[in-house]
Image (cartoon, rainbow, N blue to C red; front, side, top):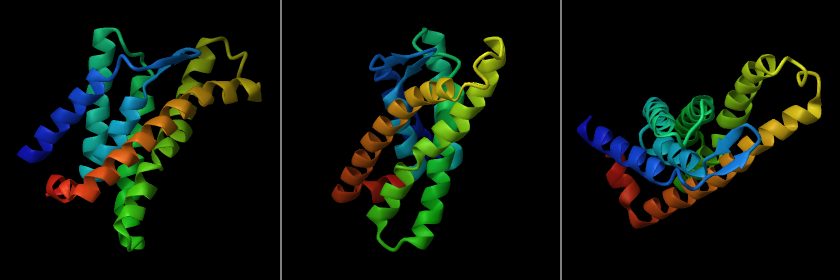
Length: 174
């Protein structure tokens, strides 16, 4: 438990320190570092810890004025999906590195399909419901989430593969 808490603290710090590296896309700010941390946390610590890390990072970023309310639906589902896919992939895929890649690269499923869609249906009524029927509007909205999530999960996959190659992944997983 102490090791997981310490590693979670480090991952929160990494995501917060890298939070100035973002780009604006419509009403959201895209933070690839959050998705990188989601990938790493989901594989090493599991879905619950990844969700907690995303929630803490989102809260800190909002408190610092560098994040938006989209930090919660943009981060939490991605970490959960990575953790769950990693658990499933390690049972179905014999090669560990393929399981790591499958899990890490699944982060956009949680971020875009779950978080982005949820956010869209919350945001649309606040904007008068005028964009609800416009397919192009939702594609534009979700494309910002996709840019951030895909970039971050690729970075996370590279970090995890490097940790695996050096043997540190085994140490961190306990």
